[in-house]
Length: 134
Image (cartoon, rainbow, N blue to C red):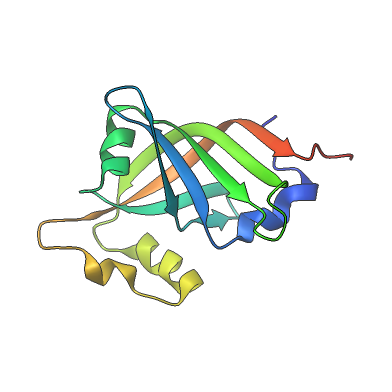
């Protein structure tokens, strides 16, 4: 299944998601991230700083998982297992779109020499709980 089920589409507008990447030693690395669901393209996108471990992990191995948890009911979630596609965001055009969702300019905390990339997660498999009844 790679189509977002109607029963869990509200989670695509959630505040945070858990991004799991694969470390060099093969162990998972999980961090909370801000994300944006691009409804026009049906894509989940992240803005990441190039100096972070999660970004380096994705550059080395693009397999990842993004867990969207229903914060009001932790027994309800949407997990997107997929492949990360990384694109430069030197002009911060995507970072600004994501920042608008959170009403902040998070990139101002990037250090000199650091840059931003946009990460598109192309779903390979979805796992939803509870299973949709549609």
